[in-house]
Length: 304
Image (cartoon, rainbow, N blue to C red; front, top):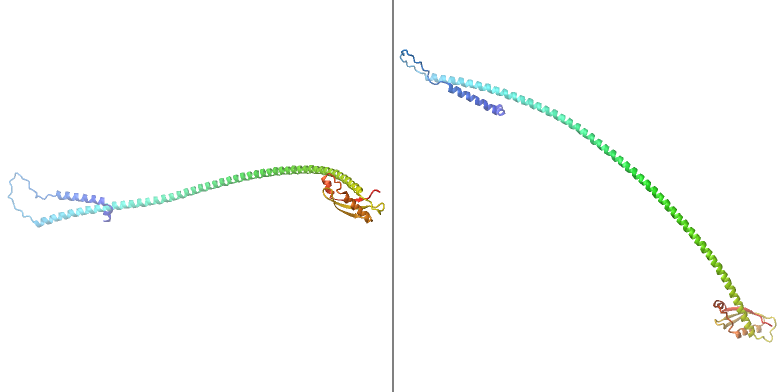
């Protein structure tokens, strides 16, 4: 059954061949009784032969058995042949399978080895590419670093140069400013000195003029007081006293004080009376000088 399942087509062909052979054997048998040839001789009288049916059946059975045995032997031989063919085919298939498996195994090993080699080559190529890329990256970084350093150095030099120029410019400006300030200061100092000298000169002139005017008007006041003075009867000669007179803006006498007495009360009083009679006293036309005449002091010494 295993052979039949394994080779159904071969089994069908073998069965068909045996059936054809069986049909040929069956139809080739002569089932009619053999006829005696007719001769021109005088026929012998016909003798009746009795046919034994059992013997005939036995003969037919034996023939059939022989035929079946022959067919069975043929079938067995065909089966054996088919089995041998199948076994040989199976052995060939097994050998082919084993050879194919071996080839596949070897091919797999070769493919694996090739894949490993390719993988190694690819890894080497990738590693080489990575190394080259890393080398290029480092080279680019180094070049970039050098460029940046050079740019930084140039920028620092430029910044230093500009800073030095700026410092020099500022120093020059500062020196110029200081020189200008010093020149202005000297000019102003000279101008101030000139102005001060001029003011001092003018002030001295003014003071001198004012003093002259003061002396002049003090002299006028003294003269007017002299003219207003009445000598006391018992007044001695060579008498003199100093008085302080407070004047109003128009020259009117507001107050008279004796600040240094002559020693003679009557003489002192006569001088005070003379000042009061001489009011209003002469006043200078210059307002500044006149302001100094608000309070004046002078010595009264009459002309004998």
